[in-house]
Amino acid sequence: MKFVGIVGSSAEQSYNRLLLEYIRKQFKSKFELEILEIDKVPMFNQDDNWADSFQLRLLNNKITRADGVIIATPEHNHTITAALKSVLEWLSYQVHPFESKPVMIVGASYYDQGTSRAQTHLREILDAPGVNAYTLPGNEFLLEKAKEAFDDEGNIISQDTVNFLETCLDNFIKYVEVVSSLKKPKPIAPEDLDANHPIKTTVTEVDPDDPKWVEKVAKITGAVSGDTYVKLDHGILTVDQINMFLKSMPFELTYADDNNQFLYYNNAHQEPETMLAKRIPAQSGSRLSTVHNSLPPARMKNVEWVVGTLRNGNQEFVRTIVPGSPENVVNTHHYQAMYYPDGSYAGINELVFNFKPWLDWYLKETGQRLVGGKMEMMPDVNTGASETPSAEMTPDANTGASEH
Image (cartoon, rainbow, N blue to C red; front, side):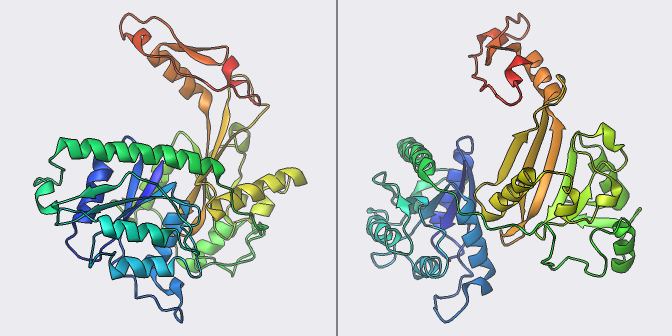
């Protein structure tokens, strides 16, 4: 599960931020938590455009895609901060990311009552028209005397407090599971697979379907190559090293941007007949409609559905197994949404691989085998694998994966 945590204070030093950071590291095996700030959100003014604020765009996009939200609120004058109230005003006026979203409230305060009155007020706000969040009932986590509650490493000192926090979070996880089962996906608008809506990085001087697109666009843009260095988020590599890195991946990787233009695949050195998703160099730069022009109309609708589902944020990824593959191949496609720095949709990273060798390796290493749709343990004197509880394997009617 992926949650976002909202720091309900714009202060540089905040015990509510510290509380969320503790939750993130202490319970990382239960869920993934991304902490979001509100310090740069302007005061709500309905005459202004919410999308002018990078931080509001980020909050809207992250909350929309999250499975659940944890808000850590301080208490100022018996209520929430003006900064948090302003954020909730913005996100309930023209956009509504909290609509039917599971929300849990926690809070830390200097005083004995924790943030009880602020939390009560926040519950009322989250229930208001335009917000319409599904706030977890009960489970009030009120961290009092916050100055004395944490040690020097940011850990909560009282084990009883930690245990109660864990109980509340476990209840929230169950609550999210129930609410998510009732969630309806957003309607998918028709997708333009012809790449007719250029984005900031689109090179419009070259026809996307030009078989020499890479060479022509490289010349126009002055694209670097060879031993030229490129600074990445967490490293510096030459273009040659990046190419070697991508070619060495045990997967076929492709990238199509949010204009539905097919920009890259990593196995241009392979013959199409040897690939699970057959690509040729001339396809780089092509419209998605061109790349998939051999598909029947019904299959093209599947392509539109995948793109629309990821663009809408209904899912962060889509996985499928291609039926009709040889017995030793489980042709697996994983379509992963990509995002710009503000959290908006940036395109699709498609990962294609044969799952069968990975499955065979896993079964061998763990001493298991597939029998009648279940993974069962085989005795293994060296590893003691037979002492591990058996795991259920869901049969796949399309692939007959349980038969391999």
